Image (cartoon, rainbow, N blue to C red):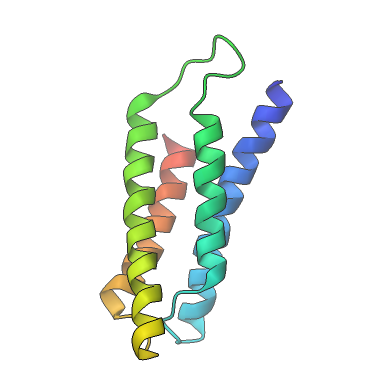
Length: 117
């Protein structure tokens, strides 16, 4: 059971890495757009995060403040990605810089909290 939990933790980190990696690729290309890959990485992070919030195996101590902070970050990150995607569909223009930078900062911050806290 512990191996399964470790695999879910790995997939959780991969989800944020996919989101951040797609952001870095767009920033390096100077396109400043949100992509479906970012959405998929965020979805993977959400699903695996919900699985990790369950107390399995029995007797594991959950860090509820960490779970709450990461959930808030995930919701805000999802909101920024949603606003960026809606604007891109509506106007065809790139995402405003503050929103684009916010996506990258929040994805990095969520991963840092997962690893360092």
